[in-house]
Length: 129
Image 1 (spheres, one colour):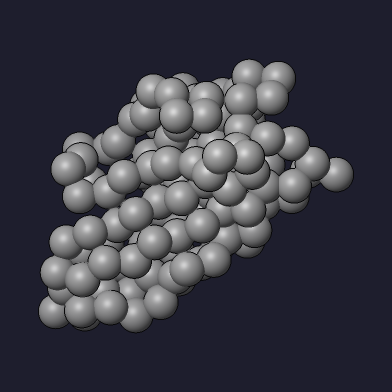
Image 2 (spheres, helix red, strand yellow):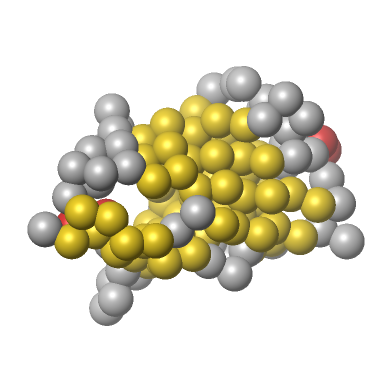
């Protein structure tokens, strides 16, 4: 059974850092072309793609709003995907979700996530000014 479990969210002041983790079960990053991505949804806003990685240590994508501040990576076993978030801003406040599917990285360029099959439950990140 495929499951994704996020952890690492919390409250932080602007300029601070957090590292989110997405524990994968039932598959590894890159198996059957599965990519893993991070999305976020702020109150009253649509869900947006933040970052994705397609293969262990492979190419990655970042939305413009987080480029240079966030880093996506995976552990050696390719069963956990991390999102290191530095220099956090109040506008980064949102529920962060990890997701897995061969189409995840393509989904970053659209707002249609209906084809992304697997989602975690989300973890709250709150950045205060």
